Image (cartoon, rainbow, N blue to C red; front, side, top):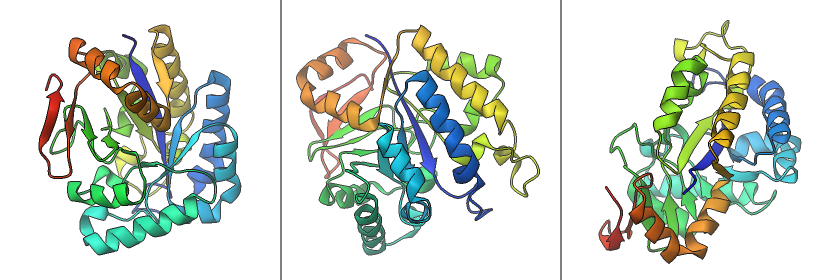
Length: 273
């Protein structure tokens, strides 16, 4: 079975919370969109509502060019520091604004920090996918979590700075990742951040180097026969052929997943965990 690759971008201010500038949106986003068009790849753009308000033309271009628009909170809040009610209000406010541009069913919390019981907020707002966790961060999810209420948690495979490492190093990492492979990056990584007053990990490999590596990444997986999808397309694949998809996952150790409910109990069948 071919590997599935989901490329995504968190559309936010430059390297928050250190900066409030938006050079990445103004200069990085056009470069990203142009490259994706050249490579004929659709991506998912998890966007904060504040950025959508400030740059509606960019958000409209995302949708018009066939990419998926997702939610990244209202102001780039740390949801793990908000009460349940505060989180609910922020998500509802952001969702209302973002859905003016089109249907929004995918969510990712800033810093990949989102308490699991807050999933109920996403379910109540008709979200179908959440990518607010990562395989490299506690509690170290090992694969998909398919909630019986109709939402899938799809963890990020690697942190965004991996995509800025020298290609010969990151190429070895990509070869070992299990499907579905979820990448994320930020528009500010595609502008030169070396002179900005931010942490080193927000500086190295940014700008033209990062853009070239993104192209290499796409071409690397394409040569391996990978299938590129948006989160929306991936959700459709899972739920439109759930039994067949489950069977394939169970028989192919490149995929890991399990089914659970909001009560956190495993259901019916589980993958190779």
